Length: 174
Image (cartoon, rainbow, N blue to C red; front, side, top):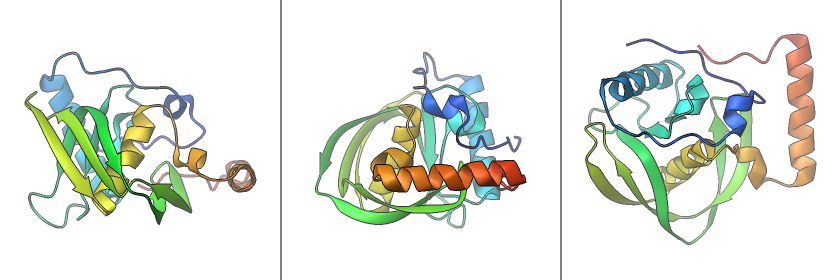
């Protein structure tokens, strides 16, 4: 296992849709292990493969940030098949260090995916787990949480990021 560098916005890998995983194999499992280690080190509660520079449709979520056994959820080729309700809530993102935004997302989500053994499963979830899963799937689709805020807010955030890049302070959590 290895901690991988976290890709920061506006890196192009974050703005391209990821490719489906053809076969869940040892390479996929190694990617997942690296993602888990990277996410826990950051620390964070979710991570998409393109956030570590890999254009594959894989994401992970652990609301305990590694503090509780059995909380890690791995999603290979996740597909959101149903949503219900709406809720506004604060979100952060490892690819946007020190930036938080209030984002409206579905309250309940149903997702179909494969696990790390390549077995299909369906999960129905709500609240923070639904929010985190939608956030990560948005990454896999080539979007960031900036798309969920007003044009004015988006412009202000982008301006702040440009200033931080210029100042050398736009650095991923390690």
